[in-house]
Length: 172
Picture 1: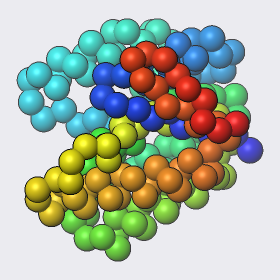
Picture 2: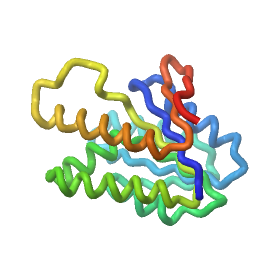
Picture 3: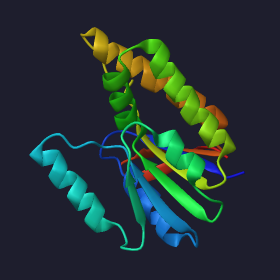
């Protein structure tokens, strides 16, 4: 079984950089699982910048919805960086638009992680530290992300909270 490492924290806190730095030190083949589906020019530029920062021998898979399928296919000699879980949650919420189907997709991901042969590093944003959102969709997103984080932390071998570029180990 592969190791699952969960890295969470605020936006622009250094989570992705930490995951990439760890992967660069790994002797495994790196698979970068990107969940972002850039919809505007600014986001396309962000994605391009991130791609340029990765070593050329890394395999990038852009998969906004079916992350579990990528994790299931990963081999024991690979390290998968899944960046980012909260973008993935946004994608499945907008595509499936039904809580039961969303929960099934989350369960599918958690099962794939529990059964993964590869080491997997999951990057996600903590979204529940601010005020209660004013609209239903934003509250639903916050709740789904928070509950998914709890479940993910429960199955992860290691959990880190990143603040101002500094990682604090919470588990493992």
